[in-house]
Length: 191
Image (cartoon, rainbow, N blue to C red; front, side, top):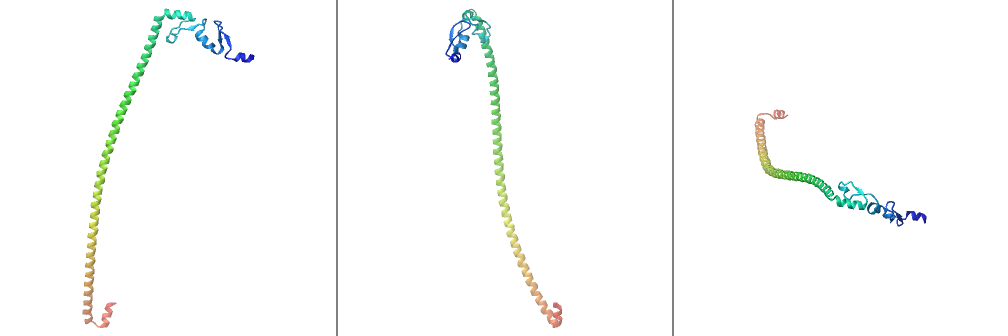
């Protein structure tokens, strides 16, 4: 039970400054905000006031030094305002830079897209020219192949006619020669 008594946050303890009985768990809050005997910072300390005192003394101080506190608050507001102005200027600079980059990027993208369209159009034109050229070349090739086949046919016909003429001439010469030669002489000519 004694151990529980020492550790229990619901037990009442006495404030060493003012003697008030307070729950143990609320003692830090009491010492900081409610103790009548403690030395507290002025509520304008965050703006630069350095006065300390009891609650009663600080209440009187706040009434008497209101103009000074107002001036401290104004200075703090001006500082914050200057900081905000600096931040706004920085944000504006970043925004303007981004707008510039986006504008440049948009122009670059449009220029690239225009170049792609130009290259595509030129490529299509070139492909069409190549198709026409290939069709012309194919037609020329087929025409030349046909002409060469006809020429080969004529040469073959001419060669066959020439061979036939030579064979006929050879037969005539053999007959003429055979009539002038004896059989033994003709057989010797054949070998």
